Amino acid sequence: MAKEEKELTFEENLEKLESIVKNLESGNIPLDDAITNFNEAMLLAKKCDEKLKNAEEKVNSILNKDGKLEEFNLED
Image 1 (spheres, rainbow, N blue to C red):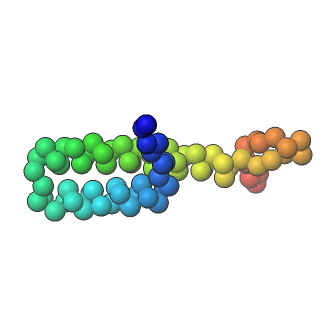
Image 2 (spheres, one colour):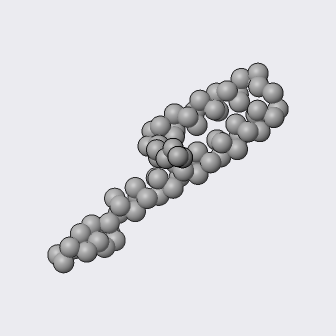
């Protein structure tokens, strides 16, 4: 039976990304491991970016009188 992987929160992904970056910056990692770590970091960065964009869309939307979401715009 395959174990279902829990989706990490934005903060957990960011923490993993920061850890990988510190490890890569140390320079004390073999090239093959550095490449693997770099690829993982890029995937984590993409996940964080997607979560931020999703959050931004939610923040920029409001419910109208009919209960439907619509874009929030400030008028001058």
